[in-house]
Image (cartoon, rainbow, N blue to C red; front, side, top):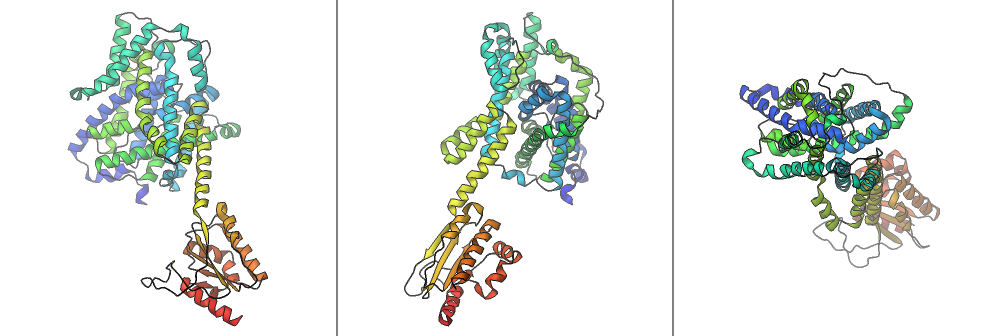
Length: 553
């Protein structure tokens, strides 16, 4: 049960005043980093700027308190921006709250049923494809504000946004573009000054942009022009849920849960390597679930572990969940005291920040490398997932990507499975006393030997029917040393072979049946039909048994 004990409780046993001081400093620094990112990601998600702060405060605190990592920092991330914006556009904020709560419940179940290790079964090509796709959708979604365009409609889909940008290019605002370009330049250049990297580049970019717009009275839209900003403490609100709404939002909830699980556990793995620790994956999933539920109840959006903010926490001395909790409390203080100042932030500066977020998360180098070095089937999954993410949505991309990857994997496994016929003659050769040597064996008269190599499952079941006999055959030996597992479809194929052999007066002998196939045969009653004597430990025993059967026939 230790895996279900929050990491906070473990580290408190040896906590020191010195470490507390480091955690507080790190928490303050990470809060300063998280402030502009939380606002920018909230706007990219189609909600108000304070929703991003609510998420970092409530989800961040709960996930740090209950989490399975020592240093995880949670909050809104770019991975959710597209799907959240879609839900808000179609179902409103109420729909987003319901979807986030459902996702939280799914994450809690995933944790209790120990799905933490199963996340790794999602193919790398799918995660790379949709991550790159999300980055492209974020960039497309911010072109409007970066260029200061004015839309006549409010498009929802990514391709519609791109079309609207082209159609509205005549409304290009040079001043907005100038503010965005300067902000982007600051974001690129500032981190190169190592002595100044304690101050987040995004914060400097915002200060410069505000100075430009206010100081030179530039005609550039700010957050205050588009949103009414509140600095009040949110109160919890339970949404109305109907069966119809739940059915509608369940696919989105699953997508949010899967994304939260993948990104949070990936962040945990990265941070483990940085501090030499080991996270509790299932407890982390439970914490992510609790955090998302609390975030939704207090008006926030989906949250997960943020790799960049977690790395910044480690870099600045944070080593326990206290740092994450301090980060949330500092953001709460900023919300209550300084939030009205966020109205001054120019929208092109927000767009520039999101451009950098998209670039840093895109993994474009890995995408290109996979396209160059991967098998064609993997490239197909990668490209299809990417295209569907951009052209349609993340839900469809993950669903189609998983199905396609599974089908291609099954095809690959079916091609690996072989059924070989032994037609050896000559003297028995003892190769290092190995009773399972595949070198020449003396096959008794009227006996045929087939060797199955690879998993026996439904996609390869038809291959097992390639076993042939003639009128003189008395014994068929199936060597199963190379069969690690089988399913019910393969067992049905063996039953058909057994029935054919029985009809022709042929004895079926099985050699070296491994544990899983043997257990399945026994449960299905097939082992009893074969007979205990016809299960042989190795190929030598099977050949000797066949010789006795032929002699008696």
